[in-house]
Length: 417
Image (tube, rainbow, N blue to C red; front, top):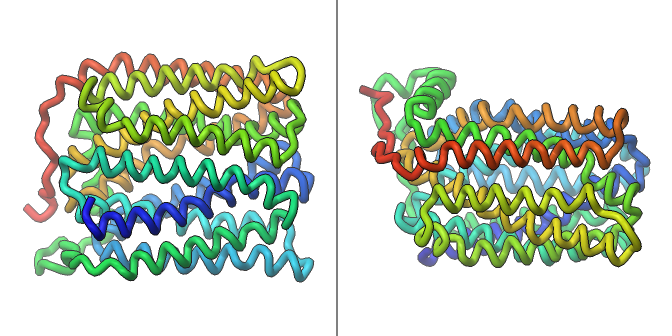
């Protein structure tokens, strides 16, 4: 990846470690400390997703018009400050569910801005033929962070309490910002700054519509965007009930849950280390299909879990290891295909359009999951999640042959022509 690519990877590894701690501690905090109901948990999840979707409409445009590294440093700094407010407000006895939701809304917006800038910044440091390997390594780091972060999250929650644990994530964003500041690779000026064409004066919505047009006209991008949209519907529904089911139906304590989720990272890590070889050996289409099948098998283990404590632990462990392995194949495959088949000058706009199309499934899934959990129960809601996974497998099988045969060249920026 080169020195600068490795610096970026190291900073993101630390940031992922902190973020994964917060990802687990946040629902623990609202479930155990604030005694949230299923719908209140769903509202917190909506606060994590919907604001980011709104910002996502223009986040890619910002990434195409501003220097990506500057955007990433600014958003890292903002996220550090927002997370630092949680333990401060808690110590002052001023932290309520409403304030938590408000802070989560701002964090969601910052996350999308960072991710859009990162998605377009990475290809400027890594050659196109090394993107699968680079994304695989980042996924591997994410898996290591999952093992360590989730493993510590439950213990930290039990010892420090949920609010104080958020300070770990705040510090990780400071490290990420410093690592980005240390990168001295010259970044080319965005086209809006670099040219005197009329595009510079165009409103951001023109860039967004251009991204929509590029995405719709490219058959590969259009197909995998549809698959990703249904996958997000599953993740939304699952995220609304998953921890509630583990905590209140299976009665596993936070410390045990943290260790089990950490073990899930091992499956993701093992898969990420071989992702480039799997894609090289079998191709993008078959790797994507395999990922959807493996992920479905993992998902099915959870609602059928029953028996004594040791057996419940095995069911959850199997779901984590198998499911995370499949999700890693899906994630790396989708990201690499989008980056490889889109010119970098329009990649930010395409990603914004992508978020508009694919992210709608997430809040729909969250609301549906919260409602079903209170009407038919947590276990039956998870059976529906398995059904959505099966739909994703069918979509991958239907589009697999087409993906393998696509020879459409990389989409170029024609906005100024």
